[in-house]
Amino acid sequence: MSRAAVPGLPSPHPIGAQLPALYADADFTQRFTAGLDTVLAPVFATLDNLPAYLDPRVAPADFLAWLSSWVGGVDDPGWPVELRREAAVRAMELHRRRGTRSGLLEALRLVLGVGADVSGDGAAVWSRTAGTGLPPAPAGEVLIRVWPGRTETVDADRVHELVRALCPVHTAYRVDVLTGPPADEEGQRHA
Image (cartoon, rainbow, N blue to C red; front, side, top):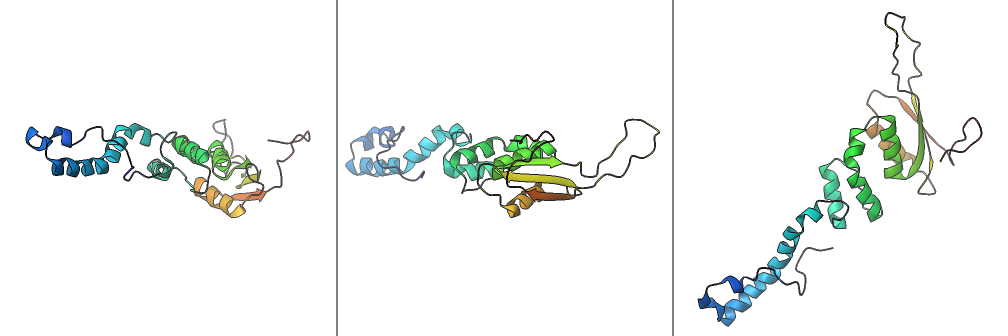
């Protein structure tokens, strides 16, 4: 979409009609201001619809990357427009949950279109009882298992890149790429 000169777009405020009576009948002045109206009409149309430009659900597609950058969102021009819109709308929510298990799972699903499962706690241990001995040392590693979801394959490099960006810096992690959802103890497949 272009916000440049739009052929035939009328100006809601023609300049020629606002000039003093002395210039109302001047042919050259009316033609000159009509040219200015052609240039200014898209500007007025943009300003009249400014709230729509700032709402990712209805903004022009070429504005989505800009809107996403305002709220720290992820935007990929190769994604379908509806996915780009959802990522921009949910950017603040995902940013608030950044570094958490649910935030990582949702970001993997939204950004890369993969199914995922996260296990491990990233070496965090605690005791509910005051004055007791130290709990045993944690495994110290978060295991992230991913499998194809929206796409037929999983790009392991992009998964590592996204996990590295979203996990807390002190967290050690390992990514396993599976061919499909893992089975639980009863043999049921996760979705």
